[in-house]
Image: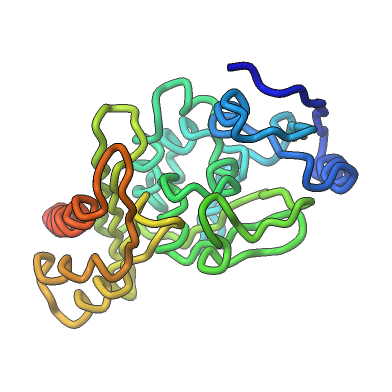
Length: 271
């Protein structure tokens, strides 16, 4: 299909983008890589009156480490995250997630800021941000990931907010990510990420609710000495899947427990 008519403006700075968003209000949408927004526009599920393109703003694509924090610029492409030596040494799980995002075209065009701002529960980075207590930085403030994801495709962003960077705690211990899907480049029917940190295990769930979910009950069970098999039985308390054309909610719950166990076993074996 063809998108509905819209106006287009390319911002040369975050300030310019902010001014445009304030001018057009809720009729405007930010365009970064466009890998989620453009398909929605083609289906007319999204019909913004104005696109504010931030893709040409310099300085928003950097990746750096600040002491115990990995700072990833909003315009960092998936392919850049995947190949970044800094990411691979500071948070290798993030690089693995980037490797599993879409196909080559999506990885070369899509951005981490776009995924986060879109707020899709199927967006791999969102579960990682939530489970690691990442900070999402905008032109106006800093959001805790735990407070950022509100509902399906709904975040705490205001109409004139632009994501500028995502700040993850450094975590280079044992980890794993398992993503169950029908075809190679599909969205996950269910995904589970696990990461060992200095304070214990962190567990995150992809596409198993309206928002990304964190497996706190699984984490607590592991902290109390439970085996991966026993701890994975707590996976159901963190998720709220629904029936869809790809799988029933019952099947997704079974997947969540199985993937949690396998991810924890894989990570533990990798240590």
